[in-house]
Image (cartoon, rainbow, N blue to C red; front, top):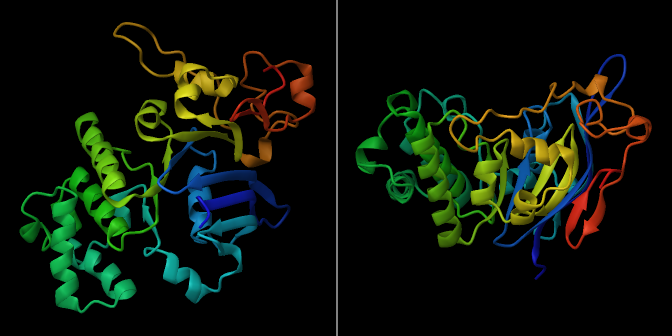
Length: 317
């Protein structure tokens, strides 16, 4: 059995438009080994969530997908709709970004967990509902028997996120995709959710694709990370090395944006992520980069291994 659970190579996501097509994600490649947590990090609009959705083939109809996605030895791109549906929620679980819009407001949370078990594991309704209570207990929701009968609007944001995690792990997937699982949660609840994910990883031996814009969260959660910008990987390496010895100006900018100590001003990255139709000709970060020169504006650098296991897309490193 290969140690690589998920292999993504030269992934391209294109938005179909009347006038011309736009490349949203460009030649993206990464591997996730078994029991490994891989992080995709970057500002909003960099293509992180679209990358996650492409793995499950859940992209909008106006987007096309090319490249290689191999999960546990199977070519995801070659599966028909019935085959990919058997994988979604079963072998690959996903925690979506906003639980209030992801959960069905007219169904109890217990039934929404049970629905996954009925669909993929063939459980009877009563058995699945009983097991949903056990899953709520596993994600540390108090009084799980009572909460299973609640509707999403009756739960706090942190509890709704725990319900989403319970749904994602219900079938004991091999891969868990966590798309900004702590967004819109306060710091205390955020820490609880991250602690829960670490415990579940150890308990179930989960591999995980963890998506975030927060380098501080990533440093505590992942083993290996890819820094993403405008649909490209700008830097990839061991997370400890990325935090301690970042090489790409964009990675340095993300780290400098973090609060260090009280009273010390933040150092934001100038400008914003450009829309796909306004990308620079050369390096896509050149119009925001503090060390870019004329060469950076003309040609786009390749992702190259600068140190052992540490890849960077930059002429200046």
